[in-house]
Image (cartoon, rainbow, N blue to C red; front, side, top):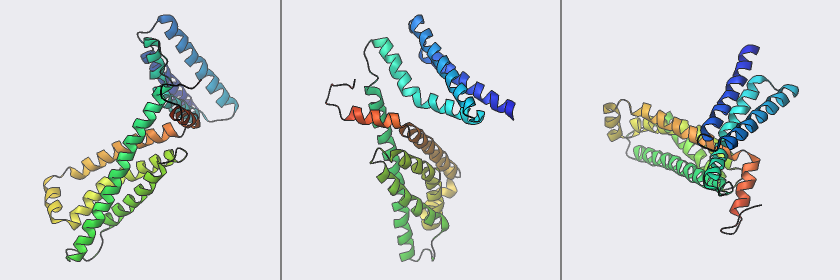
Length: 244
């Protein structure tokens, strides 16, 4: 197990190095080499500190991968700065933050809408006596939509935004597929469509998985206190002015 864990750290470090080679490609060789040396030094310091602190190698490998993923926007901004000679580092995090917030907010609103739609169809089916009870899939979809509504509210504050995105990742995995299952029982039209399109539920799970990945990436990005504070500082600046 120790050997496997050690290789996990080595693979994580190599992934970071490969990424550094990619985003420094085409730059001045001296600048690229200096950047890669900084990455090597940082990886060495991180792994040494983790070993001295008693942190498991598996946890160290996860931390290295997480740092690489969260640092991608800043790395791309650094590359742009080297290519253009202009300092765009301050603006890129704010831009990424805004795009992520818009994407996750849309996902949250769609989930709430799905839950509300199933709730409305469920009430209609009960009123016209199409069904005599609430299917489990419909009840779960309505519950997931309600939870998504709370998660959307959490997106409104920087300190809770990462929690909102994480919750939407969980609800997103299930709500689309469960809504398809619910419609099978409460909608005669949907029943015909689902019977004719056998892969519809599988597609719904695939969509849910993609939504979850995006929301988890946003949660990881926002969970970094440094990024939250830097984005807040950048957002508070007058137009055209940068932090120092």
